Length: 325
Image (cartoon, rainbow, N blue to C red):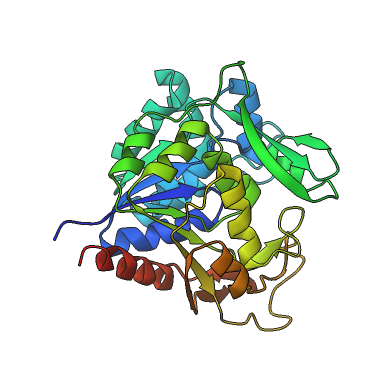
């Protein structure tokens, strides 16, 4: 039986967890990575070179790479105590920026580095132009820039993206649409709802492709609510927001963690953006017309709360192989 074709869409730190486990299970993987990040090392490189931010791309490349561990560590290493121009930059970000400049294309840089790093799968930027994320709040305020959105005290109504350095409409990067149409499964998340997942889906042709694909569309719901984004959200609220942005009930299945997070386990200083565990609203999920798979997806480590990639992928494989019967 051929490997299932699984497209994973998102960004941030949650995406590599699932990708790494998918690689270990032998899926044919395509990662579609957001290019709307404008904070930290990625934001500085993006602004100075006018290229797609490399941080999320770097994490995905490493998660799918078969390089020896030393090279993984080197690619992820950040300068400490260096001069201001290098401080907190990840070496992998600088390498991606250098190869992008050499080839005049982030897409070509990613494909070249994928070969060098022995990446098992395909990595595509959601757009080949850096994008700016705009959040429109319920009170009418519009905040521009992914890194600034969580700082505004309000409730987000919706988000949209624009090309950062030209007035053209954002469009999907090459091979992204074909990957979505050819997939057996499209996985959204885990990751920040408004700043990691939706920046990809609100690119019009990507949103249309996900609505049109015959693949099973699976959303991995976050375990914790997030400051400035999903405060007081239930799992049904997460799904409703996704459906409202694409004006269609396009999600087929939602994976929900039902294992309680131990009280006082999380280090609130280290993980200060995460608030409380997402509340379950099964009636609300039924109204969104999705299948709900609720089980233990929880992994506790380093006083933080994460998805257990192996448990998530075990469930994804049950779904994708079940469709073939």
